[in-house]
Image 1 (cartoon, rainbow, N blue to C red):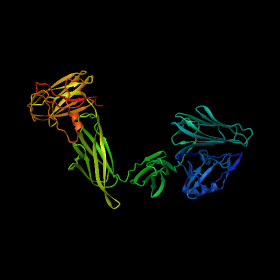
Image 2 (image 1 turned 180 degrees about the horizontal axis):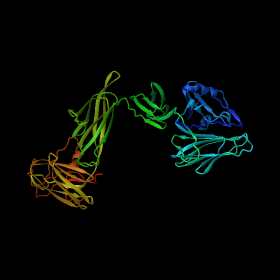
Image 3 (image 1 turned 45 degrees about the horizontal axis):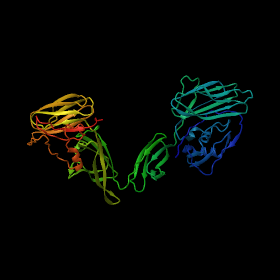
Length: 565
């Protein structure tokens, strides 16, 4: 994996003096790509390569070039190390300070360079790190007299990092990479003894990492170099091919990783792999360090389906809302969805989805389609689910193929800390009881709603630990009602009817036989409706309906367990 780390140093002011030692740069015959790259501007590439071909003399050291790509037509120069790359961008000799003009070259990343050169007039330049960062510093001192005693200092928070002395016939260099925590202050001080001394320095960083202090005695010059290439990471399937404009950019490795180098701006990429649907992504490159994750799907799957439970802190017998998003990879015709449990509603937006038999008809879809479903959470607590099956057809390679996608809507039903003892509801006065069963103080709101959801009874009660409270409701007519019990942690709705069921048997343990939904198996049915006597301390959190007439032993509806979270 390539990690392009590029910091550009360029001195615009030269120095005059003798050369201590010179070497010639060596151009490779083969191109070996490395992590250290300088991008060459296409319109000026010929001039730059002419300069390289001259193999001019370099002072003290020379950069090791490992390869040149697209020579003569713009391209890249690769270096063996970061030091070599930086050295390539520094002055070659004291009498020839510039490698080439900045207009001839672009860089791998935006970089801010502060620089200055002086032959007289002692001064100090001050810069501060605006955040934790790495800074590159290059300093050079050139002397022409034996009596030269001038010095070029670099201070980091008052600590001397570099101290270069100007001597006759000697060029002294210092180059280093320095870590600078936020708030670090750098001082570059030039102290001259005569006018035959030349000092210059360059400090390079990512744009915005350093800024010149407002009270700095002197202000250095600065350059922000243009961008040439930026890297971004691709994560996907192993051996996944990446194309741009029909040309292969690269192939992911065995871990599904690929690093791509490209210019700033918007790029359209296509991702392909045998046995998978093709994918495409539009990537806007604003700098290095970006990444894109590509999820590919086998050709035998047409649908990407995701679910989301909208209702939070679900309790027994609560109406739950959930969304299902279906994204077909291609146009899906005659699309439909089937559920393993009867739902209360299925909508797209505000419109109901029509049914044919037991299937909900979605029709032809080519874009992600979100449906909203509502259903009763049931009486059992813990992890629950509803199965779904999406099916449809599409046209692939001149034939119609049928696809199916199976999945679950998973949800969790919290237990309740109360037991509700329900009477046989009738016209007139009706009494029911609620018991707190976890040993906590609890404030509950109790409300009865009619068939139009108008409140006809409402009361608030504070329950002591294991306390029992009685409520009396006067009902004037038959019909459907809802007993609502709620607090800040949960909201439970218990529907009941008045005047539609008559109990003739006078025994105290009579119950109304439950009507079991086809979606519940025999095991669920036994758990849902098994009877436990009221007096047992260890009543479990399984909801049941027990009916008794006023004046006789109450029947109970039990909802036991923890608070709704």
